[in-house]
Image 1 (cartoon, rainbow, N blue to C red):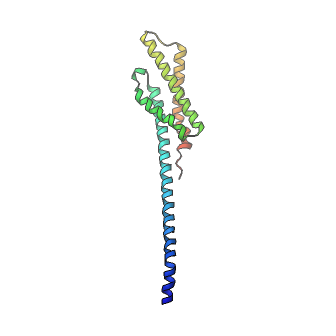
Image 2 (image 1 turned 120 degrees about the vertical axis):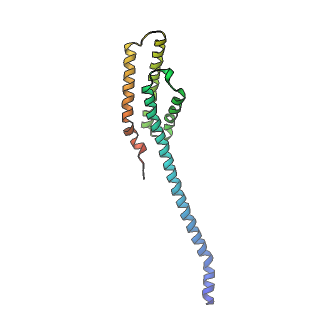
Image 3 (image 1 turned 90 degrees about the horizontal axis):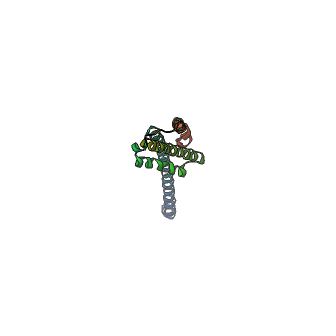
Length: 158
């Protein structure tokens, strides 16, 4: 009995250390897994905000008929996710967002010209009207294709 006690006494400390180290390693691994999952969900949330903001920006742009009716603060809030897209998206999608931004700005410039012409009791020339119609048509097509465009970025990976 004395030999067994001495043997257990000699190995109890190292065994406890190994068990504690194993438990610590397991908890560190679990913490890492949880942190990675949270990062993935946060990334998905940011990408979803960019997608939703882009959709709303296109809708507001297409449905705005006068700069006087435009909520400029809301527009600025919608441009922010487009700008932040460069941190989360690949170059192709960033180029796509830049193109949408450019089209929206062109449309707002056309609205500015139309408002200016209306103040002078004039109408826009046919070329400007045709350009405005083409801009709206292109933005509507982009809006319709947006789910497919963002599909790879928004695909939720398990």
